[in-house]
Length: 197
Image 1 (cartoon, rainbow, N blue to C red):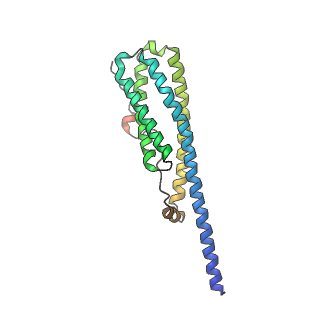
Image 2 (cartoon, rainbow, N blue to C red):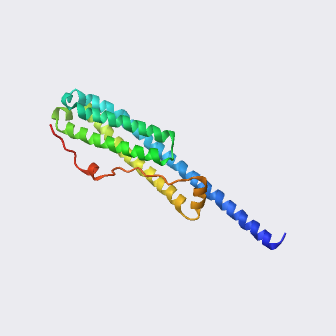
Image 3 (cartoon, rainbow, N blue to C red):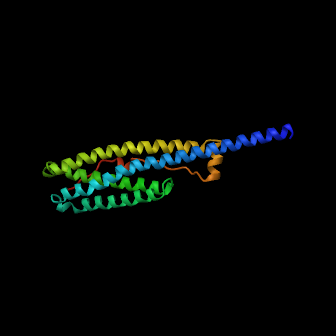
């Protein structure tokens, strides 16, 4: 073998070694995103389980606010369906975007619910409602923390998949950019809730 062939084989071997390393790193980062979503999923399930209890406690006080209660229930059901899609297809951009939108709708519905509850002193004084609200607040904090971990993992993955020369391996093996979960996406969500009684 000539020196040129040895150098060519060595360079080829290094390229293959590097490509395998880049591929494995992308797989590890994609799996970290799946794990981060699993942490969100645990908290979302807890949140989704608490909401019907909260609505049931408030229902006896808010018979004339049926639309608000129905909006919360419908939003919760949409959020559960969206979380199921992400769970079934982790690492796919479409379901993650759908989950973000569904959670935004749920958050908006819950803000409306909370505004209505604030308007009724007898509801605010209900001990069960206070306990459930406190649990929901703690769960919301855990969701926010889990969302931050998910977004950090997604950022690491997206950076690795987009940086040269690893983007060549990412393109060949179908590692696509993934969206982050956002707490608020529009000015309407940031606006204060209007309550009319």
